[in-house]
Length: 247
Image (cartoon, rainbow, N blue to C red; front, side, top):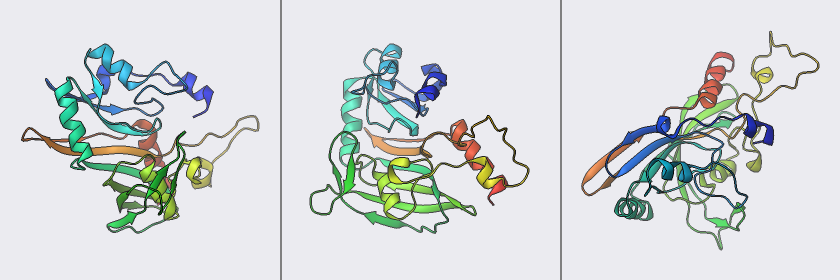
């Protein structure tokens, strides 16, 4: 996200992000443009710092990319953090993401099993010889003329896993320039009746890659947890415009 957009972005109150809280766990719907943890390049705001202001012992149990929105689990004590971390490590957390991708694609339990090599500095690649196992299952949810809403189920949890696996299928996520995904402009889909003044630069409908952590389900101490996070405004707006002008 460009620097000007970062200055314009106003972070809501942490309490307003909470979709579930009990004695052990906080579940939030993370907004886009905010890091989950401290980053090397710094930054005034991240979820961990805000969570600790809300609850002293808070620990983020996993992470989402800065631009990814959706469900994030936060433990309120070390024991819960340990238990949730074990569930992630054992791959017993069912995770569902939604993504809007370029092109029309029919995915019916498509299993992408391609190892991913993390080369550091957020640089990852598909590497069958040296990469670590990475598996994602994709299903089409909704078709448009030029785009597709897909459900993504990562079985493993590698960096950029969904993004790079979709790119291997020639189905890069909208706005994901790192993997050749292109932004969506209203002028592209609303070809009639769209005007723009000469001194006005058109902005994309969504100013990030269109990926949202939609739902998670897991069990700790015999108790089943299942949560769902609504789409943020930018993701919902893009879908609305596609339904209106690209159907």
